[in-house]
Length: 98
Image (cartoon, rainbow, N blue to C red; front, side, top):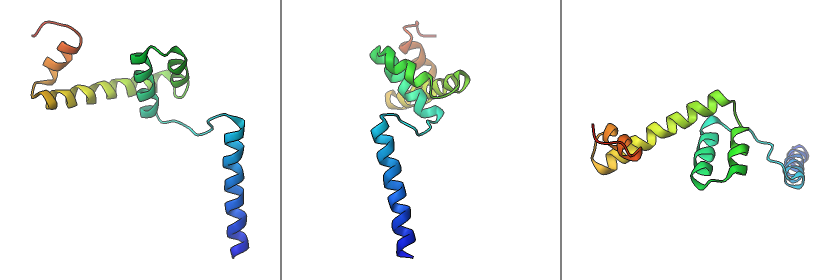
């Protein structure tokens, strides 16, 4: 039993080392991770990170993730400011109050 466990742990450690040594991130990213990375890179004007995040998921999934992030951000700011989401969204876009 201990031999099988040791063998399994050794295999895992070797896999992690190989991933680190190769310098590539082999794990898959979900659309919310991609959206968060994409939006934050846009805010920092980091084109390299924008391109990388855009490649993690399909354009449709990225669009959905960015939209969901925007909705959640507006709702959070509206609650924080004790204002309506419409007022907050218009203010963020520099639009006059409706």
